[in-house]
Length: 286
Image (cartoon, rainbow, N blue to C red):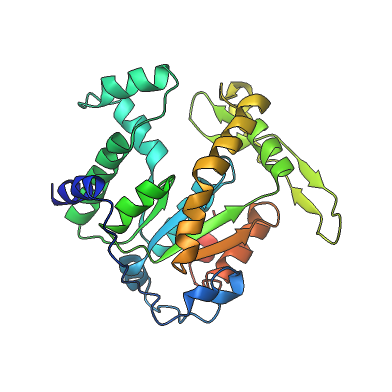
């Protein structure tokens, strides 16, 4: 319970902020506001060594694709992918002590408290430590500056990747999301084609269609309506934008504008992270 103890202690004493010790100390990360800032980073040759050192965070608006790219990178770098949304769903489906409390909060549409999220995250970090792993990619946490301060007190985040997407594309992408009610697969029926204006390039994101056996079983998330999506974006801008500034001020934020669909964006993201020569990049993209 060492991780939990330190997390909760940090939760109570967040006025004192401990400085980071990052594996990117040899890079001038105050320049990391652009993708080129990481191009000079010396890549670690051994993938296992990468896995031990990587402690990254994915930020971005709801629906931008944090989970998609975080999962692919976790496979590529052989580290754990930790999504707080998955942790909540796993707890809800279990007989754990938080299950009934979480069910009541979710059913009432309330926000899950920092204490509960920290509790779930701490258990996951303990599991990783017990297996002798130290590397991970966080997806969906932190969402507030307070959470970022708590996280800063217990682990050394090396890089924060902020995924960005045009708002009109983001809304269309969220409205096009579909889930297979049988296998749980995630798909998207939206075909996004936005003409470039004022010098901006055209954006094309093809649909991610299901296999034939899932076509008749697709369902839409109840909260994927235009009204709800716009409200989520408003809340994100209000609560989470300050988190971007928190990490930008510490020279750890890498802004990455998604140029299009997964094939194009994945390749350029690897280039931005100086991983485009990694021998396993194709298998990770599968």
